[in-house]
Image (tube, rainbow, N blue to C red; front, side, top):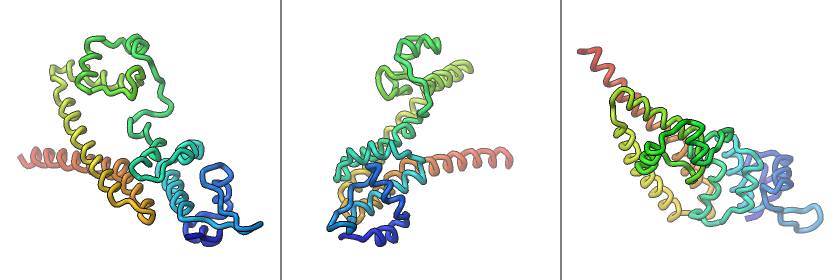
Length: 225
């Protein structure tokens, strides 16, 4: 279906000036030019404007990040997970301001025991994004392990975190698979909202509320006893 610019504005709630700016910046494809000063826009424009608006509102994604993704996107939902690229630092819990170190530089900078580092990597307590790319985030986990050791507790509890994290990742993969199975041109914009909403909203909400519930239950029991 094709739309006039006024219809596109009405359908997306995005001003004409912003839409034209997105086209100029390469975030949106050019409109279909019927004749001079007569342009038509497609469902793809509607879908992508929805994606851009969502990413900017909920994740503060920049135009440059979006441009890089949208210029290399694929129309298949199963491979359109490349659209999640601007959020990979969020998924990996690494700030874009973080310093990055090679393995050797990381060991020297944070005075890390090489044997401990190997064990943590083998147990997947540490999972740097690349084999030779370490950040302060990995250093903070090593410090946490040190606290466990300081009070005489094995860090097996963290290995349980790994076990359950893997189980959760399989559930998230099932969600992706189900979304791929039902993907069509009409529901695509809703599907990525489900995917992102699950990964970046529902996960944190459910986990933190369950933690709160467990802690509150323990506190309540202590008070009653």
